[in-house]
Amino acid sequence: MKVIDPHIHMVSRTTDDYLALAYGGIHTVSEPSFWPGFDRCGVDGFRDYFQQLTVVEPARAARFKIRHFCWIGLNAKEAENTKIGEQVLAILPEYLDSPTALGIGEVGLNKNSKNEIAMFERQVELAAVRNELMLIHTPHLEDKLKGTRIIMDILRNEPRIIPSRVLIDHAEEHTIGEIKDNGFWFGLTLYPDSKGSPARAVDAIEIFGADKLCINSSADWSVSDPTATLKTVNEMRRRGHPDDLIRRIFYDNPADFLGQSPKFSVA
Ligand SMILES: [Zn+2]
Image (cartoon, rainbow, N blue to C red; front, side):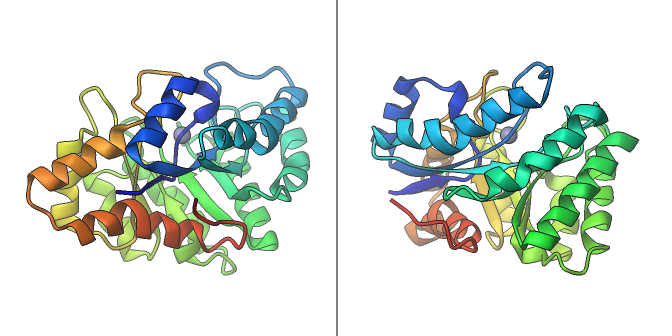
């Protein structure tokens, strides 16, 4: 079984994690830009991070024969500081030009605030101008449905954005239907505690189907599991789902979505 994890934060993971990915058949990953667990104090902090994503991490992954791609963007949590945010927006094109940068992400909303929305709109505009793929973060809080709707309204208001080139991540049962109805891809994120178990993800697959679905671990610096996709593969097997459906969800689908960027190829 070969698996692609389209959303995993490898800069926060150890070499043992890379080994676990390689042993499990996760030979290709894509890493969105995100919040490091603290607010960076200036644009130079973002420069260092984007350098890590575009240069350092692909080389580290290659030691384990894993292909590493990334997404460049200003995350919602740090979009609140618009002074630094403006400076970050200005340097995004430089890093989007990197040979392993697949598009703009993960960008979106966290608390659905005015500043978050403004910074998100600017990045949608940038994606439209540059014809970039987008990977979208939706709020983890009770405002997920509201935030998802605001995000989709902004995307739909930009005619140059093609929904099939956008993945709206951290979807849940109450947002999947609307995301699919609007033609976007949807991401299901697996979490080791409470929400987002492999069983819940497979329940969602059985209800909503596999079309335009990507499953990811979103593993980062907090409590998370970089092999969560493999555990979900196992749960599908346990329930008797056929191998071709499993392959479609964990390999063909992410390859199709990511492969819309000419920079993408699988290991
Ligand atoms: Zn993430």
